[in-house]
Length: 479
Ligand code: PXG
Image (cartoon, rainbow, N blue to C red):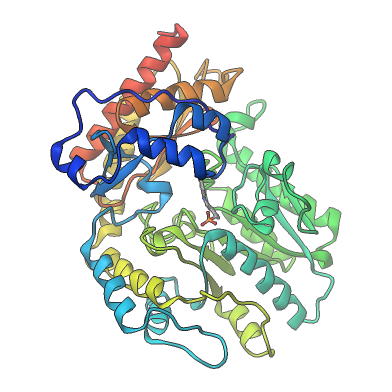
């Protein structure tokens, strides 16, 4: 996949911006774009190209909708960046931040101090997470969460007297963030190329991407098993005494919503247990309801030793990340002296207060239950019914409110487009121009809407996605 920014020509609005919006807005779109181009460097972007085409300026949001500076109303099929689980505009979260800023805007959690919001959040997470997760360490992002994971894993094995256990095994096309540690753990070659150096002792095995990588007549279950068994081969190659942990996203998010068959995770877990290797689930996208369970590892039925959390923890309203420690790991960290790791904003009171308000909404409004029993199954069925036998859709992956649509030249033969990324970009641009936000990863189109989406809004997303995919097929001359 590629994050590189391609030039996107945004459609001009059919009507001038509404007067009310113009009154609130400080500047015209042209002014915003000029200043943005002059002073702002965007993440994962080709700035020359972006500055020539101009960014879309998002000025407000409510529920599952965004508005841009030209007054266009856009349905957000990506929950911001896989994070706005409770949807936009929830006053409860704004109130929590406002109250906390007045009461105690900041205090640290170093030097024998703590504060009510971080205490409440930790107790609430322990209540909501599966039984063995009762301890949480805080940071500001998923990347920092995975950096923290490496520190915990290292300290854990030190406390067990197993100092040679240093290698961490990860997967190609996995995504674990963009700090040096997160980027090294991830399997994106184009990120590795731009790093000054990489974290030592991290190696990658192949991903369980059936549509793109299965050869011969393997069933999805056989293929997933074979990919899981690469972990065993890698451990034997390195030596179990040298391997500390395996990390994976329960389903790969940024890598294309790759859902492994049911045989994958039980086999990974069996291998980790057999060779005494910690199993880390990166739940940054999967956590907090995306699949209809609180955590995606529950959907796949395995028990990790550590979980990385971010995004949906605060629904993206303020930055926060965390690592959840299985009792077994927590005990070793707690009982063995100093753990020399921390960030100024570890457990930030405002972020923690917002997280508590967010988690209470998810729990008390039964938002995740609805994803599991109602909106999730509806979304998955609607996509499968709508794209059944579509000439360029090869596979639909996902569960709950996350989905990946594989664009393919010959769906039945599992033949992908030669220039996959280009086709994805064409389709993504049709989505943009139809006022639907849908992400393209190479030749897979991704959806991950806010978890509060209703059925009418799901219908709107799916029909807009269908129009964009049809237009893509038409442009390619395929019918
Ligand atoms: N782990 C996973 C599984 C992620 O998806 C991170 C860690 C890093 O989190 P932070 O908060 O440091 O960004 C992520 C982030 C995309 C996209 O385009 C996905 C992410 C971030 C940016 C873009 O799909 N995921």
